[in-house]
Length: 216
Image (cartoon, rainbow, N blue to C red; front, top):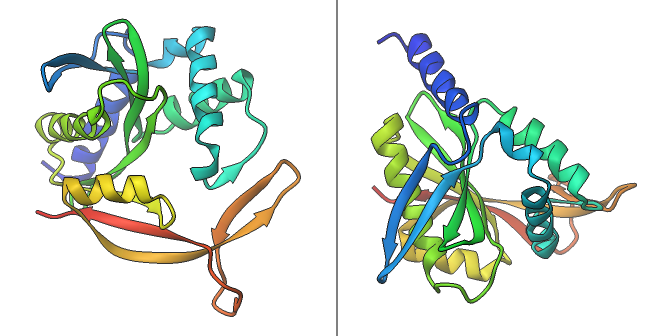
């Protein structure tokens, strides 16, 4: 298959999944005797106000780890979901459901068509103390799904040097650091954001953007 056709087919496949019914795409999982599901969030989900409010609450809970900080609301979450999740051609987001409870989400982003890699994205535990270890298992199950359905050969991710919990999880899963970029915090009208530090920046670095790759 020609590379351009292959790329088009993959992106069309992503969008077709996101345009479907919520609940049509689900990965049934089992972890330490606990059944759970990864359910793909689709375009119709932005009409579910309770779900958007839940995603907003989770974002607020973990805002320290995001590169941009700003006032969080259900309205802004809806806009983000429309534009940055459904509107992004190569992003998929799965919500984790244990019994009748949503507890977090995991996602895929930035499909690389040259080497068939994809980035692990939006790994968030929204509800604490529900099936310890389930987030790592969710990521593993999602990666397996990506390999089986879209031919993904390997995975990468980004996290920050001060996120010890995430670094321990990814190390345990077999990810290794391939590079890190120094960041500095810049205030904005709405809050602030972490940006790449210029080469001439000589103040102490408090946070690095850490890039990791799954060992083959």
